[in-house]
Length: 396
Length: 171
Image (cartoon, rainbow over all chains, first blue to last red; front, side, top):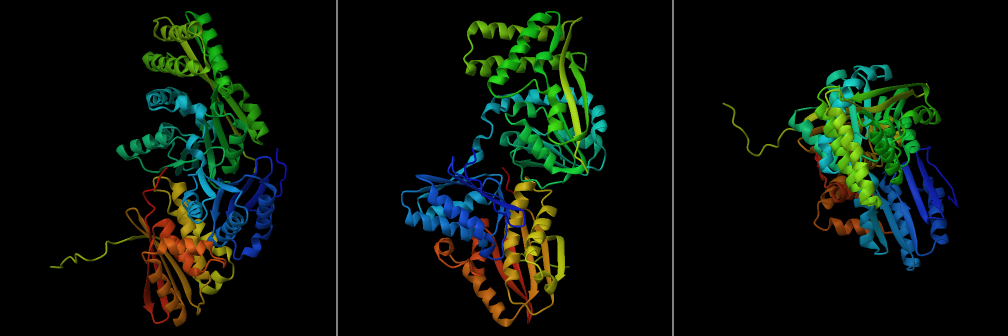
């Protein structure tokens, strides 16, 4: 796919790359040269890129964390000159709102040359997940965390959690796990990152209302984080690899920001193993269908037992995997029932409808959830939701 | 009984200060990057989005340090002090410089406050020459809404004072 890779670098912290297939010139890293001479290879590559494309050249600066004015001026100069010489060519600069300065600064160029436009890429990071991030789902996320926490508070110390550590919670959602961790384990610093602005707003509100300090809620894409390498003693990423279409890419980033000797802790489900009695058959059928439904939207909610392989492939050592079952016997069975009802709403509602499922299918699909709820509330019933917790150590 | 001066500037609280010999600072261009990245990260933790803040603050501080690096100095020390009041962070860079440089900085800072700053910034971007120190200071006002002023500490020492209103930003 990369037709014309030609990387160049300044002190290894900056990369320029051209992809002819996508007509995309990309800059990544941090570039703060003293003189433009240091940029000669990258500027040459940009000029070559301009010469070899037709119609439009995409300038991707999504991962360009820093660029001083010396470099900005040099690259802008080449683009502005090209606009004047090649009026047939459009330039589309792709920025990210995660890197705060880029949209405004590159946006100035369109005032000089109308052939230059700027598009902010991350307004729709992961559209498939929007089902799970709407405001109505927030109460159920809180209930889920409350139920899993009963188990995880004793599991986490076996995976590197201890007082005083520096930790990151990636894909923190509404931030409730970070709050529980802070109260229970008192790490010295928690960076909690998510790509959902509404979830982060909720998290910041809760923190402000309850006077919780010490958790840094930050916006970002888990697959391309602005966080520095080798920073954290423990990186957690819960229930999230399973709903990304690129779990290996996320793990690579978790590995990168983890300190050598530190650990990355992940939790994931295997939805088809949700169970309940009575009416076990109906429940089993529905959760098998849940797995297929998520697969349709490029999400693998069967990932739990694959955690060991994913961690090994990402380069981790000392991999530990354990499994726990959240059940209706943990705390109030009504919480369990509420969680299943919310799943039914989203899975048999929005998602199945969007897939184009028939009303007969949806009726049967809903029945399994209803039976799971009945099992949870039945005086002699049992209902379970299995979760795999796994962690690996980044080699020293 | 002491009276309260209604015109007194509210007090900024000092968070961190880095002092180094100017000769040491000038020995390596990368010091601008190291100092700006380190200080930005250090003061970012209690901002609503620490990573966003740190990225923006580092960009602005780096440009100021680069301007300082390119200034002709007459020995002495470089002091870089960061302080905070609400959502505004203040950078104070103090160093010794010649009278000519003092005058240059005074004029440059006066120019960047002008109403035509947007137009001047765009004009400098479309010009052929490499960015000047004027343009670097101008960019701070245009892209970061910074306010700048120059203070004379003594006959041959100045302080560039830059207020950056970045504290409330969050995605």
